[in-house]
Every structure is written in C-alpha cells, then in structure tokens.
Image 1 (tube, one colour):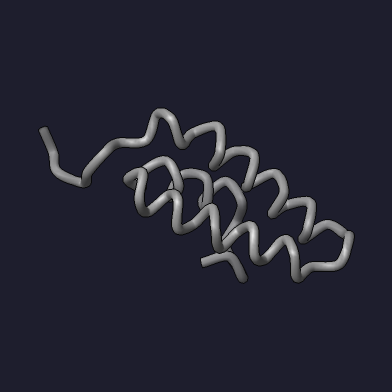
Image 2: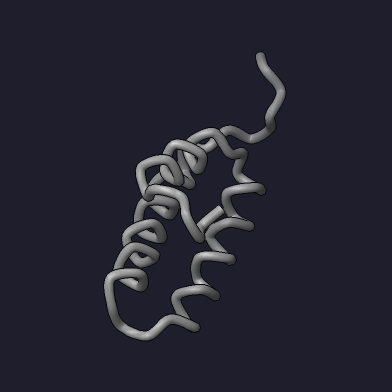
Length: 66
C-alpha cells in the first residue's frame, strides 16, 4: 500500500481501520522508518506515523457496523 499511494489516500485508509488493524499498520510504518535513509520518503513515513498514533485512541474496536 505504501509504495505508490498518495499519503492522503493512505490517511483515508488508516481512518477506516479497527484498532488491531491500525496497530499492525503502525508497526509496519515503524519498521519502514527504521530502514529508510533521511529524505522525503522517510519524512512521509514519520508524518504517517504521527497521524496513525494520533488516530489510534479514536479507532473503532471492531469492523462490525453498529
């Protein structure tokens, strides 16, 4: 999802995830940050990381529609 997708689209996808799914994505983002050299791509991942962490408390518990 992160290779060719616009950051705004990624944020939109992250907003739809449940807490467990979002936690998995946060871990993927963190591991990617560790692998990247400083630059625009790493900055994008850092911004996505901050965004995902800030949304985590508000994420839904399950994907069930209530």
